Image (cartoon, rainbow, N blue to C red; front, side, top):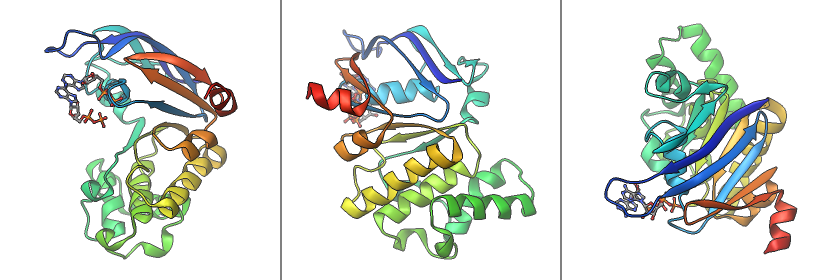
Length: 229
Ligand code: ADP
Ligand code: ADP
């Protein structure tokens, strides 16, 4: 089952001569963990913005869970996506971990009982259930990102996108988050797409997409990618 299908996608910023993305095609299957790697400027963030419908492709098509992404479907598509960004401190809205995870659920009008259940389940999945009444800002980097992941998965997305979500973390924080990413796809059958510079993260994924100058230059299992150096 295909989760994300990107077909012949190109993107050009209005003020730029060259395409930030050039004829990019790939698929991500349900329950698969794919990492996207590449030098700065290779087009990773642009690709992430296209996947979440923040920018429309200049040409080509994107399907998310079988839905063709366009102006009319963008909100429907976003409900299927959870997104976690680089800086854990920029994504907290609640004064406690519980409030923080509740925020998105409240916005969707989820009832109290269901909300409690979802908060507890999400925090369990990231092993943060013991921190439910803690202040997010006082947590370690790895704990903060796990709360950010919990807030995303409480909304029950099909796919979680992590845009350099481990890059500001210390080694132990990185390890915690990678562990969570693994369990999300193995135990909870979620599709995970992570943009990263971290080789440990690349090694743990099912598949790696290497980008350079807006193109996919290599794609394969971590073993395959590492063999090419
Ligand atoms: P990465 O995430 O891999 O570092 P980006 O997607 O940010 O790469 O950038 C890809 C290319 O698009 C780069 O050449 C970058 O300078 C350009 N770019 C990114 N954002 C913009 C923008 N808002 N306006 C113009 N050019 C941009
Ligand atoms: P990243 O590698 O994480 O994309 P960047 O430094 O490339 O970080 O980009 C940071 C922000 O600046 C992004 O929002 C990106 O869209 C924007 N940006 C990047 N390159 C350009 C550019 N050439 N012109 C305008 N905005 C840009």
